Image 1: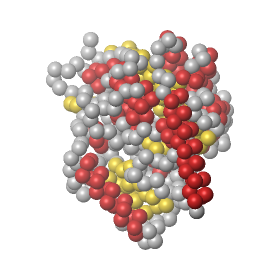
Image 2: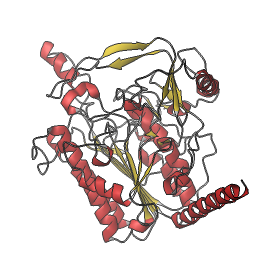
Image 3: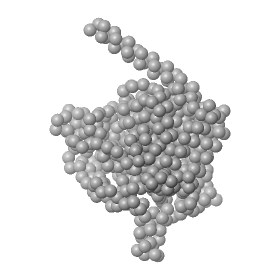
Image 4: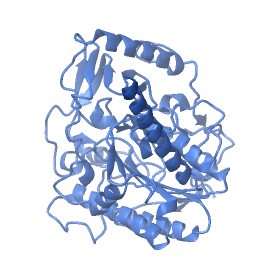
Length: 494
């Protein structure tokens, strides 16, 4: 017994030493590149199971870095997911639900601290290039929330007059007003193209990438934070001439392959400028695939359901991190982590203080460099209307009674138009063992009452903090979004 204890202590000391050394090496004022894809499913890239097409640059990133196979988002919907990423908070805490549209008169609150604002306290150059979706009027745009530069769409690329619903309405009544205005391209805090066209969208991934490379090249002598939230692979799908139709796998594959090319351009630039060892690159997605779009949507693989649900196919996303020579190459982390952890981890790496207001994320540097346990006791799954639909720990997931959308096994179309969802219900609480049943196919609540009871207690904590519209509980720690006030300029004002 004595020798067993000594051996265990030596192993623990060795692990602690390796984490400490890796932590010290990572703390050399690293650059941060955060690549965030829109609606990419868990199984849409080679390292996570894609087989119909190749993603050589993401394969290369996985070989040189670390894949996170149990990495989740706070919400399976655009705006809420992005708010959580940039603030380190469960989206309910910062007032976000669902996806903001062109008519929204709210946005990210001035009181919230973003990753960019943390980096600015350490004299980082900061840029957001791509889709924002946290409020489109000037007071909500990236340049008011820590970013020196911004270029991109203020919300989703389908929020334009050619949305399938808008086209259907015009086909029924040619005089029907459009449900969406023209789609603007924004630079800084002003519109530089008031009417983005299909031809513009075809070169959007390339345009974003060119600007991202230029930003890196302009900041070789200064630490930088680059946030690159691509508009793809959200519908409508577009690719440049170099990728469109070049393989028989369809427009979704074309868009993924061009995103992969973009990743390659970023990695090549870092290597050319000898920045690979000083730059942490994170690749992830805002939620799972939009399954109702059929062949124009991605795949969640073995995971259940997709975007807009609290099932794993909606919230578990493919994630890779690379920092050449600093993160263990060709490795996998299967511990629970989340996009809410990016902010506190970046704060630790750059030596910035955490926000003064409460956040929910944890520093996951130990997960990035070793086989450490997850720092999360539990993470709640809130849906767009404020329902607490599920809660999980490292291994177990308790799903509460709720209604959710499903395509119910239908394949969907191949023309870019969605099929209708069917409503399904969870009638009574269900428990899933994610360690042995990642597909959430077998309810094991009767065999594991203690696990269910423990998660129910943790759920009560989250209800007290953030509320639960299903039970009528009001949260004590919710911070609302800011409103657009009469004195505030609106997007498009000169």
